Amino acid sequence: MKDKNILIIPHTPHVHVKVRSFEMARALSTENNVYYLLWDEVDDFTLLGRVKQQVAGLTIGRRKRPPSHPYTVKKQDDVTIFENVRRAYSPIWYAQKHNSQQIDRIIDEYKIDIVINASFVSSPVRKRDSLIYIYDIVDDPFDSGSGNMDRIRSRFIEREIAKADIVTACSLTLAEYATRTWRKRVQYLPNGTDVSSFEAVLETEVEALRKRWVIEGKKVIGFISNFEPWNGLAFLARVFRRLCEKRTDTVLMLVGSGKGLDQARSEYGSMSNVILTEAIPPDKVAAYFKMIDVGVLPFDQCNLTDRALPIKIIEYSAAKKHVVAVPLVELRRQKFPNVHLADRNDDLWADAVDAAIGMSWNDEWDNRIIQYDWARIIEDKLVPYVQKATRLSRKVANDEVPSRRKVLSYSQSK
Image (cartoon, rainbow, N blue to C red; front, side, top):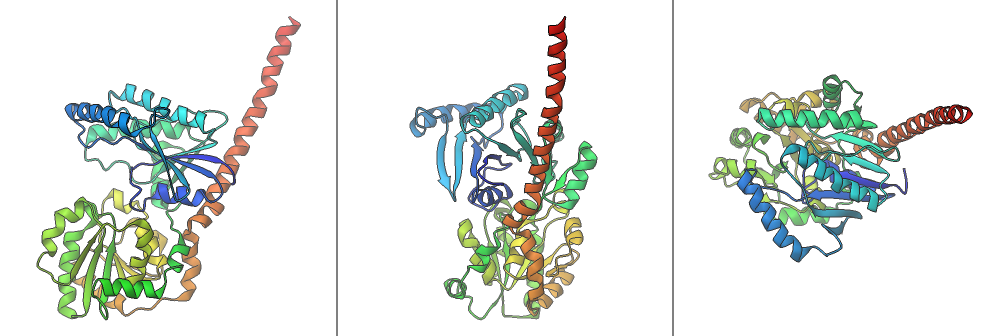
């Protein structure tokens, strides 16, 4: 798949942390023109909050945006990003009409060939014969905690899946769930990473990081994430205290930021051998994965996490690290050789992490991990899906032409 104009609509506005949609965009941009749509974001979803946001947006927008564009355009990693695209939120019928028109304008202006839409709400794509439409399910969509929001999402997703030429999901479990729920074949398109970025990390970079954080000679337990409340940080604090009773040479490093970390800070306040780095630029993260000795994934278990294939599992693996993780349904199915599943019990986890510290990497596992390189995922999975959809759309178009001609010749003969 080369020289295509591809528009990606992500489910989250983040580009400062590694997320599926932007990592896919970066990989596709090596041989295609890739555009990335970021809507205006609203923090306060009350009616008053949305009105304030719109008024502020209009005022700020006039200063920031060039008069010829209703949004700003910038480049990042060869991806063209449309920032602050004006978005409507309510009422739902108006928001979807307005937002669809915004997407239509971009498709027309940039002659888009393929749209990959990962939005869960209010970003409908109008289907066209000339367009390959991919709807990408990046998470279990029903995690809002609001029954009304879940209903809105369900209706939106159902409509987009019905229109889409291809529907993809980031895990086997999620693909099967979505296929059952919406009764349309959902293809497995796994999460991935740029494996070469981990291979490019020099030992001198790792040594410099250890020196910077004053952890030379220590065994580093690392949790690298954009922390959410369900990340299990309180549980991890208890586990690390148990581990410290077994050995005195360990350090726990929490790399990242987020609401979950803010909520759990008090759990770590009394521990001197815990390091909180705050957010790290995406291009620097690979060095942190290489620096740690053991990775952890202490997530709470729920539908959202059980159906996920966390990107960080693939990143730990690309860095050739052993990982201790809760037994998520998808991880049990994937059977990564370096990922050790342990039930969420303080003592079991402390023992599992202790054992993982002494384990080495088996080079034979490299062949398994390279399958999750984004270039390989695109070539082996996404390209065949697009080729098949293209053939089907051409067949439909060719089948329709004779029927129109028959109608025309019949009417002329009359």
